[in-house]
Structures are given as structure tokens and as C-alpha cells.
Length: 437
Image (cartoon, rainbow, N blue to C red; front, side, top):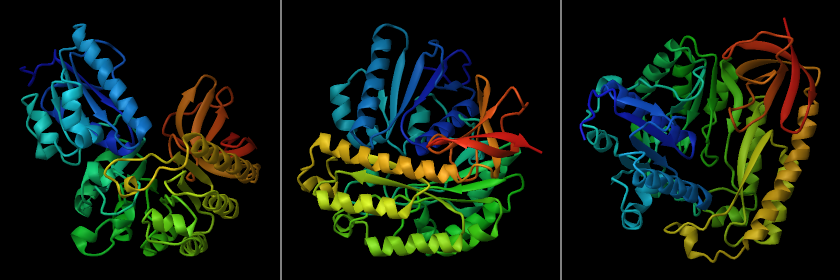
């Protein structure tokens, strides 16, 4: 199929899964357009003759969504609506051999590090001059910045190393260049992502170098907020907290997935820590960066989790009073260490435990949000919905955290503006307020 330079052959990139996949899709989109190919992201039209599906293979629900999406486009191919269906990403990396047999109508399968090979399907070249350039698929005032790829951690439940490979840090110079390019395009907020952001630099610089990276990114003109995600707790580099406290454009926000609180379960999960060490770390974080918002994720129903283990996690959540919290139910993933254990917590019990944690967190969030009433915050405006503007404080990441709701009839605001908002009321997961001068 000759597609190079052919503006009439429309390519639709469909992205499933996490923000890391989104970045990969944006890089692909940038490369295709750089080769003169008419590429779009998640087109609302049915006029794309070629579809590239960037899949997720993290847990059962995500895998099923990816398979359903592939089958939907294979059906569209059989109906003559599309000509070619290509599949890339985590699911394809992990299950390529099986998927080729099960879904033979897919034209080609690619893994997570097959960008050059994927481009060759379009007779396109990987353009080195586009490294650090990215066409964003979300509102341009914020952008995800992937600082590394892969993971070296041995967590029992996680299949990420099977799909993403070993940890590979991106050089500071390359990341600063990308940040400058994004700032020139109007990006004001960088969301740093990785499989394990606190491991950053060990492979390149022989030390944990996240603090140094944060300093360099903080110096980029035009970047008002830098937000840190996916900080592994074991071996957490405490100098990161010093930089966070010193630099006003590094958000007082930390996404630190803890996964559990019972020491027995943390050992079973191969997390390399204990409840006591975890609580000590949280105390240190809060003392070094007063007022910091901490987001975490937990897993309910991991293989071997007892009612006692769960109650300990519940107690930990109650005492820790996280600002933000999410819960996954355990997914028994083949070829992981935990797969050798018996998946002995029934699905209904997993869900009940997850629901109980979220119910507790809901009450904590309501109390914490109520304390914000009467206070004024700097808010970044993300979008307008109906008669309301929707924004976020520095303590909130897009899509997963609290939002600030402002009556649009009282103000004229633009997407990407920073405004001061006085909070007038709150719910468990939203704040309502008025713009103040």
C-alpha cells in the first residue's frame, strides 16, 4: 500500500490504556505527519481507510477492551469500511503469537518498541529530527512527559516488565529539549510519567537522578506546573522533596502507588518495604513539603490476602488520610510471580473490599474538601462543559483527581488560563468556587 505523502489515505490512531500509551500514540502521529501522511487521533469520522490500535494489556478489563476494539475494526474491514488494521502496544507485545492465530484478519502486529517497523508499513522513515517534537492529543496547555520506559522492579502482580522491558531512562538533555518545544507550543503543565519515576537515572547516570531532572525542567521558561507521577516508594530519593519545596513551579503533589499496607502482603507482593517504612516515608514527605497532596493506588484481593490483611489496609487508609486514592481489584496475570500462587479471593470479595476502601476514602475526601471552603487557590482552566468552566488546582492531575467547577455565566475564561478561585462549596470529589481578582 503506497501511503507516503498521500494526503488522501487517512490513518486513524486509536489509543487504549494509560497516559504512557497516549504519549506513544502522539509520537507515532508526529512521525506519520512528518512523513506527509494524513494521520489523526481517534477520528470521530468513519473515513479513515487505515486504523492503528494502540492496545493495553495491564489487567483483565483492559485486555478485554483492547480485544473488543480490535474485533470491532476487523468487522469494519470485512464490511469494506477500512482497508488495513494494524495493532501495536502492550497487548500485542505480550500476546502477539496467540493473537495472530485467534484474529488472523489483522494485517500486522507490533510490540511496544516497534515504532520504526510500524512506520515501514506506511513506507515512512523514522525522522530523528522529530525527536522531542510531539503533536498533543489532549488540550495543549498540559502534556505528559515520559521520562523513562520499562521497569526493573520484581512486583509479584505486575506484567509491565513483560510488555515494556527493562528500565531505560531518557537523557536529561532530550527531555529538556522536549519540554522547551512543548512550552513554545503553549504547554504550561508537564506531567512526568514512567513505569517507575524514582528509578530515573540509575541506568544512565549510575544514581537516582530525578531531583536533577526536576531542576532542569523547572528552569524551562513557560512551564508553570510540573507534576510527578508513579513514584515507587522503595528507595525513594528524598532529595526530590527538597527540590519540590524549593521550586515554585513544581507542584506540591506526589503520585506514589503503595499497593498495600500489610507488611505480610507487601512482602508477598515483592515490594521491598514494610508498613512501618511506608508510614515513615509518608511522614517524611509531609514534613519536608508541608501541604503536599499525596495520591496513591491500592490493590484489593491479591492472591493470599486474608481478611486480616485487608483490615490492616483499611486501617492504614483511615490513618493516612490520602488526598487522592484509587483501588484496583487484583488480576491474576500469567507469567507473573503471583501467578504461581492460588488466586483464592473470590471476585465478589475483591470488589467488596475495593468498594469498602473507596467508601472510606470518599468520607476522607469529603472532609478534606470541606476544609478548603473559604480558601483561594490558583486554578488552571481545562475546559468548558455547558454552563460551567472546569479547572484544577496544583493538587489535582487531569482525569483522575478533583476538579474545580466555576459558573460560566459570571466569568469569561479561556482554556489554559490560570485564575484565582475562592472555594464556596464542595462534594467528595469536586470543588465549586468563584473567580476573584
